[in-house]
Length: 415
Picture 1 (tube, rainbow, N blue to C red):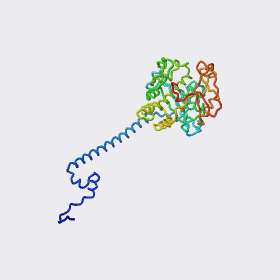
Picture 2: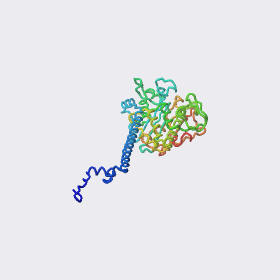
Picture 3: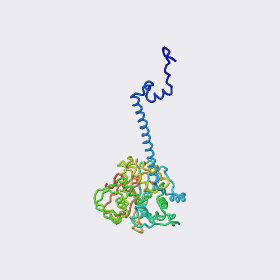
Picture 4: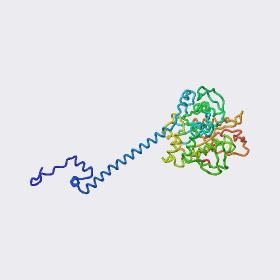
C-alpha cells in the first residue's frame, strides 16, 4: 500500500497494539506523541491507579481476614458440655417429648463453684458446686414472647438416680433442688427439671461468678435503685442509697446478697435476680448493643468465654440466632416469674409447689400457650411468713390466659 507519489505508507497499527492504546485511554495519534508532557501524566495516572486498586484489594482482604479471625476467636471461646449430652442420651426414653417443635426451652444455671480464675475469693474451693440460680427460659414458637421461670434452690423435689461427677451413682431421693447439681451436675439438674415440669429441655447454659461479672462489665454496668445503703461483707457489697450503676463485682453482690437486702429470704433474692436480669435485657436492647459492632464484640467475647453449653448451642452462629430471637421480642414480652410455691409442710426453711397453679404454669409452657405476669401488690395482713413466702397461695383464676405474679423486662430495677 502506497501514498500518493508512490511514497510507502506507514504500516497500519497492529490490532493488539490498538486495543492496548484504547484500553489505556489513548488514541493511536496520541500514542505517536507519547514522548510529550501528556504521555508522562498519563503514565503517572496509570501508576497510581494500579497502586490504588492494590490498596483497596489489601483492605478488603484484610477486613475479611480480620472478620474471620474474630469469628474463630469467639467461636473457640465456647466450652461444650459433652458429658451431660452423653448422660441424657442414656435416659432418652424417659425424657418428655417436645409438644411444639419450634418452641425452645433453655435451662440457665448459675453455678456457685469456687474453682477457676476469679471465683476463689468467694469462698474455699471444696471441689463441689451447687446451682445458685436456675431459670427455665421458654421461647415461644412464633418468637413473640420469652418467659423465664425461676426454680427455687430450696424447693423439695424428687431427684432421680444420677451419675456422680466423681464416679458411681446416686439413688433416687427427695431433697432440695440445688443438690441435683452438686450430686450429678448439669444432666442431673436437667432430668430433675424435666420430671418436675414435664417440659423437654432443649438446651442449657452454665455460667459462674466470673462469667456473670464479665457480662455486666461488657455492657458498661446496669442501673439499680436502693432505698437504703447496703453493707454486706458476705456478699462483698457496700453501696449508698439511691439510683446508681453497678459494675460486674457490685452486680454479683447485689444478686447474691441475702442478709442485708430486704428480709433476708431466698424468695426476695430470686425476685431481685429477676429484676436485675430484666434490667440487663433492657440495657442491651435499648443501648443499641446488638446493632453496634463496637459494643457487640465485647459482649460476645464476655458471653462466649463465660458459658458452658450443650453441643446444640456451642457455636457463635447458634448463639447469634438466639440473640436475634431475643432482640426481636419487645421488652414488655420478656417476662420473669417464680414457680408457684410456699413453705414446705415439714420444714418452713424449704419450699414446695402450690398446686394446681404450678401444674397449670407447666402445662401452658409445655404446650407453648401464653402466660401473663402482673406485679404483685402486697396487702396488709396478707399472711406472709417471716421469710417472705406466702403462708398459702391460690391458683390463678380460670381465665383464657393464666396470670401469675411476676414482672417484665420493660419495668427495670428502678420501677
